Image (tube, rainbow, N blue to C red; front, side, top):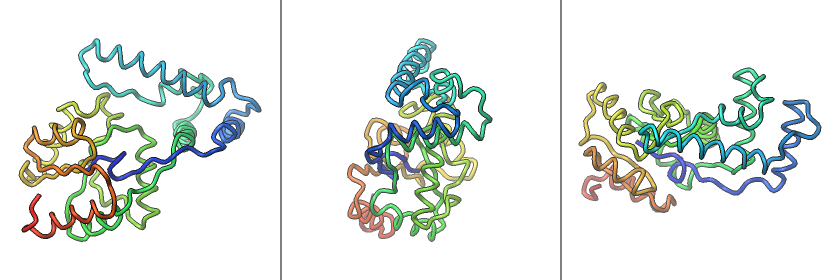
Length: 234
């Protein structure tokens, strides 16, 4: 099981012309020469809505809430409500690319290729939105990998559930899906960059863990040796 951002995917800085690209995006999709909100204002308004939604969810007993990003974006920019699902998905994906650049972390492609060749089952536990899946799949394809190496039923994306890591229910859901495949805690490894979100809650469920604090070629090589050469251990 893998964390995504900070483990498999590396986020880089946004494009230097992000504000201009936002204008072009709005012109192409909304027909507005100058949108009602500039990129900075749109992002600020979205953050206010997210904070409000998180506060409401926590008051209802959800300690680690996750918003549904399309609803947030439509509230911030009501013109988006007229979009079809496909149009909205494309708009929000392109907006996400104005926030950061994305690529597989160094060494991850080789590691995943070797795991897939070993017929190892691969899954995901990620705090994410729908555009994350597209970013992840695009990065895999760019690296020559087929996204299908990750088992759909073993991928937990927080936006689909309304809560995310480190909520223990994330790991309980995945543990149940693993048991349905007759895979147990002693056979499960969580790879992530954060102690609080990835390593500690996975350990609480009896999983093996590997903290990828610096996802470099050497770190992936260390994990590869630990998996493929038992004498090194996990």
